Image (tube, rainbow, N blue to C red):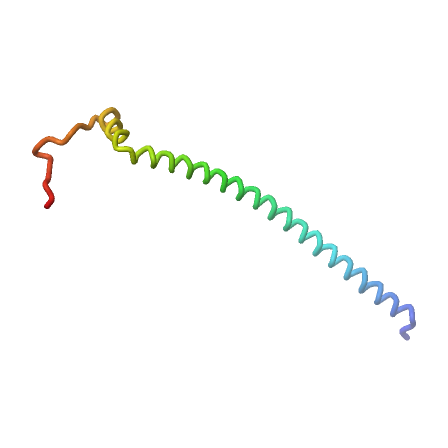
Amino acid sequence: MFGPLTGWIAATAFLVISFVVGSIFYVWLYMQRVQNGYRLAKLYEQHEALLAIERKLRLEWCRFQDPNQLEDLGRNRFGLGPPRQDQKIVVR
């Protein structure tokens, strides 16, 4: 009932199905690699932006640690002056 032709057809069908499944898997892996590349480039840009913000904040932090700069900022920008005698608290 089953001749030698049936065996060849089954083997050919198995090979074709294996090739199609393998090809689909290869294309899926390639798409994942491309998407990961885009994701990595976006994360790199965010990292560079955060580094720039960190540099600016460090510069501003150093600027605010100078007592003369703080005094000028308090006087000119916020209108502050030396404390009055009744505003002083002595801590022992």
